[in-house]
Length: 409
Image (tube, rainbow, N blue to C red; front, side, top):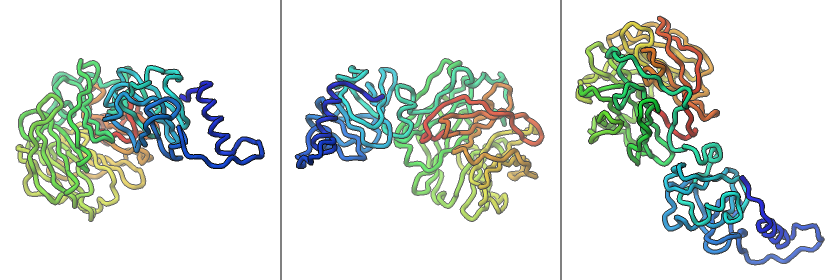
């Protein structure tokens, strides 16, 4: 939205004359920058007074809180290539409203939303700031017409994962560009989204797949930038207890996947692919730690995504889905001994997704499904599992929306 007013127009004409761009044939000598002219091209600037007057702040990026500038912005100059969303509430909370502007400048008191004048508490600057402005941009949200359905009352042990608060619906976690971690619950469950905590940008990988310490609550593993793997025990409400250090040296692993019970001992395990292309199974000990790892095999360097999807072929064993660098998706049936049988091709063209996620049964039919983050359409797709021997999936439908920068797992 670009404000238009006689006041803004007068400011633009004045700037044009001063810059010598009006077709008069006369070049006006350069003058000291004033008003909007103080803002450099390529920058977003906000001002404490109308028409770019008063104090000026050059905004470097999105901000959940404006600090000393809270409720002080009266005008703006957006000379970036991205839209900017100004929000009335702190934290980009959309409930109090907000609006977006493209490249240009203006004063809030003469805009279509004058209530923004000296009332902005947060802002979003980026390629999707317009699409999500005054809507939820911090975490993934379910769509009303295709949200998760309630699961069967009784699920086998290998299917009881993905529900972090025990309400009978699959849930998901989202990490946004600010490092916030959110838990999202289906509307039908009566629960809403919940902020788990901040500072999660320190983690290079986040994986989960059911209970790892024997308390029947969904847990989380996180690897930090130094290569330390941490275990976060779930509390059963979408939050976590005090983390426990599993060990260091995990930055030698290119990818991690929590995949359920691969070894047939009733305990959830972890898969890890190292940088040489070797895939390892780390058998869980039922306390959040692991026993001696087992080599699955080599040649996995060609895979850029590993997903612990649960039992996709109805043989009561945990399976694996993997995407190769050509965009082909492969199904690897678990053999119950920490390894896999002969793979089958699920399909091609999967390299357009940033994440593939296994959250268990989304559609309520008792079979695990596959989730895909499609950044170009800012959406989440669910591919319902068929339960067939080849581990195939049905045609996708969109069931959630989120910004491209949000990680879902």
